[in-house]
Amino acid sequence: MTNPNPNLSATESIEESEITNKSIGSTEIDSFVEPNVDRSSQNALPRTVLRPNTYSLLDGEWKFQLDQEDRGLLEGWYLGHKYPHTAHWPGSVEEHMAKTRGEVQAAPWQDKIIAWYEREFTRPEKIESNGKTMYQLTFGACGYETRVWLNGRLLTDIEGGDVHYGEYTSFSFEINEEHLLPVNWLTVRISHSMDAEVPRGKQESHVYKRGGIWYQTFSGAVRSVWLETIERNRLRSRVGVFSLIEDSLVRFGFTTRIHDPGQYTLRLHVYEREGENNQPLASSDFQLRLEAGQKQQHVVIQIPNAQIWCPENPHLYRFEAQLIDHSGYAAEIGGHFGLRKIEARGRHIYLNNSEIYIDGILYQPGTATYEEMRRHMYAMKELGCNLVRVHIAGIDPRIYNLADEIGMLLWVEVPSPHTSTKRSRENHWKELLRMLALIETNPAVIIWSLYNEDWGAQDIATNPETRQYIMDTFHYMKIKYPQFLVVDNDGWQHISYEGKLKSDILTSHLYTPDLPRWIELLDQLTAGQMEGVAAFPLVVGDQYFFRGQVPLIVSEWGGFGFSDYGGPNDLNERAERIKQFKQELRKRPIAGDVYTQATNIEDERNGLIDPHTGALSVPAGLLNSGQDDGSCRSN
Image (cartoon, rainbow, N blue to C red; front, side, top):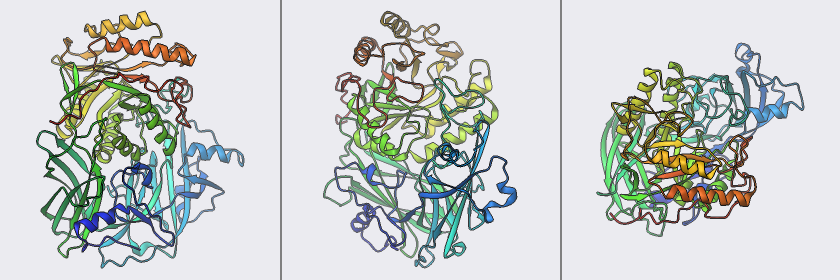
């Protein structure tokens, strides 16, 4: 087993970090990444920030059993149980249920589902690091409620919980090496329900039933799980990056996790991501006195003659950050970032101080695999899009890295609950924080939506508490995450307080297959008409008078091919209609648009890209406005 060597020079150390992870045990996987390749595909683990450590993937065949009578906890299945079925991890409870139906009569998934998984693994070789290193178990995503036992012991995650809530982001457990046996068993209990108060995006619930735009649930063991070596005193793989292109200063936010209090050095190196030169462009040491526990620490470093990141030239830098203890032992993480600036000024959106028009597309990955999502991203680029709106869903974090690499802007959204209550808002807030912690380094992410079409905030027009929560969250985002634009409630019913919009962008969802009606709606929208344009009034709360003070984006339109939206089914006719509608958008003072949508998914048959192969069904470049936005010009 290999461990990071604290005695390496800066140059040698970053070269080691490029060999990003080798498996624990007899088989080693060399993950060296050559320059000028799609690095996201070289990373075997679903995360954006990496460690130069060892790991063992625990994917593959697991034992499996449904527990619809909820007997497992009372009967102590985690202490020893004979599971009658097998299932492949990663997968989903729904897939695994379908498989068991051929073997037993599985109960239908109507209200709540409980599933147990278990597998054995041999003990990794003992860590020889003078007590500096330990094991960590990480789940790329699993849920909605997940309990984990190792050899019958209930594990507590790093955040301090015996139960992890959420199904879109990763979570980890530190492992006491003394609890490992020659042969170990890992037991996982997953519980999910149709609870409308938990974040679920477009998965069905007690409020919205499957059919039309509401989809089958896709829950459970949805991403990889792995055992890895980590340092007892380290930087967590949660890094925030905020840059100002005018002064070439980059602000990093690190999270330290300390078991042994004392004096530490945070050493930060910045390199060109590509090329032969391994000499750092910038380096700095920061002396820290750290107590036990977790702490956020922000530091700043200047990159001389820095290049900016934009879709036409997605220039990326890589960073290496080390936390070094008093003996010189270093715990290291690494990743990439780009310098970019996003602003909403008047009617326009500015990327790197240059006006940019958003040529967007709505993307609902559903049950797509990581490889299929990669194909989709390249296909959306081929369509001429400069932005992908990832619609109220969690995706594999490597897709964020891929977007950085190919120059695709991203609009991400919090998966919404389906009802408006105090508990649903609490769950929404926790989900937002979980997502933010994991994708702060990616320059491609420029816009966040808090809600979509008031799902989970249906009383937004009548309940001051709902509006106050959204306003408070908007203000929090603007203060703590100034690198993003924020939309309060996408589509309609934006919040006005004292005549000020609590959203960086005024967005509208407009659906009609009729070109004259389309022209009429666009004229009404740009003239400032707040009612009768979208399905509901565009603004709620205090009176709001639009005079071009914020950008307008038609953030959903088209839907051609979906039965409820109408429009042409013939692909050639569909392409021509899209072209005509797009031309009308560009004739008006609108800052961008998002065509609906990229791929077919369940009942929605309005995609332009084959969901499996990534092949286009319309001409390449169809959604490209054909303008040079100038966002890569030197500032």
